Image 1 (tube, one colour):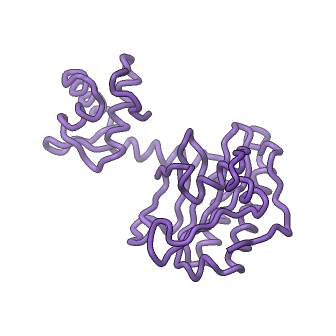
Image 2 (image 1 turned 135 degrees about the horizontal axis):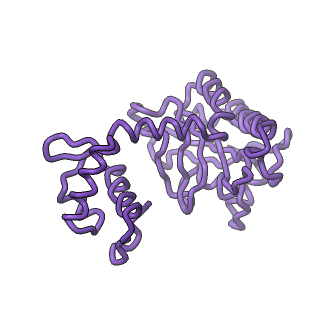
Image 3 (image 1 turned 45 degrees about the horizontal axis):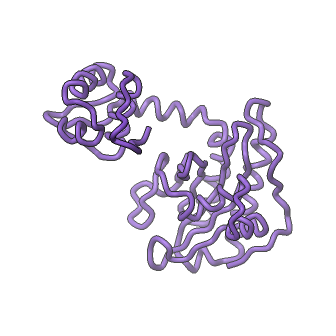
Length: 247
């Protein structure tokens, strides 16, 4: 849950808890005062909720600081393991990382943001700084534009992505590096999924790599289609074999 309007502070217990966890999500650790400032909740409410969250192991207290607890790691890991799109994509993501040497991302659209379901080779990287769960503005990120194309955005960029099955940027976020993203499809929950690679500009501009990324997206799409009915893909995207690759 994101704090879009501090003037409309939620009153429900679950909503207040979500605000506190959201504040902790965006910082390694926070004091009580900083959580109060971030959420707009009363100090008494925050303190009472934090004490309960510490008991549940959702939050860990270290002196005067609070941070997300071990139970949140367990829940996050379980959510990732149970995610059908991630499960279908994981073998392909690892193989693409091995053959390309690039950081590989699997992303879905959540509101106006692209969210990484997986980042292979990203954590701890001095140049990538990406991880599972990271959010990016969809309209200004490479993988976000691929996701918007899946959902039928009528922007000229989205139409180009649909025609070429490729969103491509050089040095957008770091000098000497580039990113390429390919739409995967839309699953029956309405979520859009896409695949991206990040690496040195020369490597990302290699036509053979771009074709490999497109092939990987098509492979993931086929694996999702073959999954049980509750996880099947809505028939709104076709992965052709002869789409153009532009660099």
